[in-house]
Length: 408
Length: 128
Image (cartoon, rainbow over all chains, first blue to last red):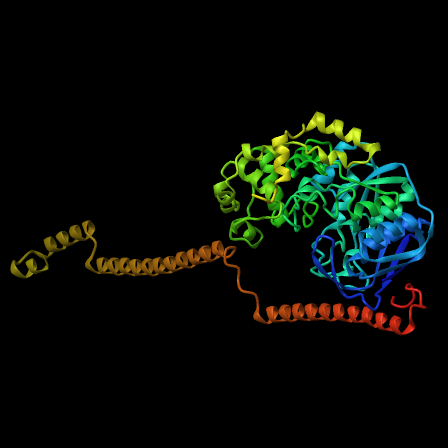
């Protein structure tokens, strides 16, 4: 793979070319198979930025092209030896040319999506600036996903009143299959990488919580993952970001989505929290799968019956009619154990299978200590103090629930 | 009563006086017949009106039923319209798929060009 960046005013454009052994078919770090749609994308910064450190440009490019690169990555500007080494240790590729010096910064920014998890991060780090990724259409790819209301999420981010940098990008449209989206999960930070020198960033805080970091949640492997290749501090991505002077920080990596929900709804950002990608100005759509899942968690946190019009026969509720395992299963257990009248909801079948109780899910109310050990020095104490005061730590028995996840 | 006059001879004056007294006191047979005919006509007219009103009530009741049912079962859209929508959807879908393939072929084409060219060209060139 060969990549080249060109700048036109406030837009940085990435072009890439496949080597002979590269292919349109690729595999993301989490194992998801993807297919390339086109070989260019853009990042529109909030204002023109002349110069971006080559390591940051290389990092941003790699979040887009990594799935398709087989044996070689050639950048258009020489990168630091450390960055090239991080690439060659993390992936079976040769990286170059090498020649630049490494970069560094001082501040920590939050990659803020507007959902409950990143709002929880924002409440833990009240002074950290936000960087928000906003999807825009790609000039060469017909946009068949106009129901995705990135404009609303950007507007809500602006309403938080926090220091905000919005980077608009069409990089998600480089994916043809399964659908437009981040080629690698880390591509959400491509804009933050390009702005890192401007904002003097040394780290970027993500809203990935315990399920994603330690329990193999979402579409991953459904088991305890201390060596998570995406999010562990010394995994291949963690080391690559660090080599670019931009540490990956997961302030909520030790707490569950129930706790991030509680923190988000109890914070000053409550009115701007939005996990739904479809809802307009009037609020979340209330009909998508994400809304149903998050409603279960919110109802459990607020100890009230489920408030939804979605019934068990709807397609978005289909997976809860099947036996486990489920993505985010720990939260389904948590919700089924706490929501009154669960037997009349679309989660009735799942609740029967899981047979969870408040006692069996109490560990999800506490913080998993090893997550704090992963947080780089400058920011660890602030986050650890917050956890001690607002959340509380897991007992040894509770920590064993994390470490035996997926073995039951 | 009429026949009485034929059965017994009654003096004319008396007969007139009795008849005048009777006429003043009772409606005449002719008038009575008229009255009955008028009443009958009126009853028939009312009957016809009642039938018309009953029909009107039935019509209104049917209209109310269709109006209350309309939101539940929306009228099927014009089949010509739905055919055009389906056609537009098919075209949009096939065009998008074709564009996807075109873009992918372009990527592969550049890959082939580069293979021949052995990497002399910078990646930024070409494809806009």
